[in-house]
Amino acid sequence: MASGGHTFLARVEEKDGFEVLGQTLDDAAGEAFDKGARLLGLPYPGGPALERLAADGDPAAFDLPLGHGVEGLDFSFAGLKTALLYKLRDLGDCAPRADLAASYQRAIVEQLARRAERALASTGMDRLALGGGVAANGPLRERMEGLGVELNVPPRALCTDNAAMIAAAARYVEPLAFPDYLALDAYATGERGL
Image 1 (tube, rainbow, N blue to C red):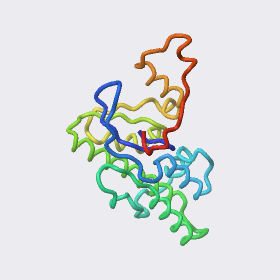
Image 2 (cartoon, helix red, strand yellow):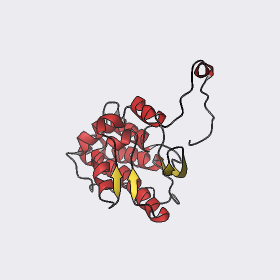
Image 3 (cartoon, one colour):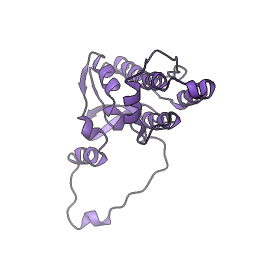
Image 4 (cartoon, rainbow, N blue to C red):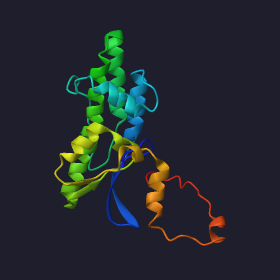
């Protein structure tokens, strides 16, 4: 799942559980898109605006960090955002915004794809599902299609629809009868991850 709130890789074999293989150490992929877009002067939500600007740029124009120093299957996007900030500061008003956007998007997509490749190799699994708002990103979809495994991705319109994602997950949960569901409440656990 790659979203604005969290990014993680999970092994799912049954509908009622999963094993987290790797997760965000700092910022989520969607947050990185939003903050990078803001640095480039683009509107919120940043992902779609950054993708549109990046379409006119060269993804190889700038060598931005891919989180190589992060061990295992975890993600880190904080250094990438800082690198973009410094590039913009150093280049000033003559910064090639489309090239920066394309290079920045490539760095996010590559980090996600490389961790997915590692996860597939380490688990021996031959299928992958993407979810969350970042799964709407065209270059990410294309890159993941190139992994050579069965890929399941919701239609773009449903990737950013939290209600649709919650409803899809809820269809596998045993419903509570009236009046039992009236006593339910939700609390944050304060724990990292899920």
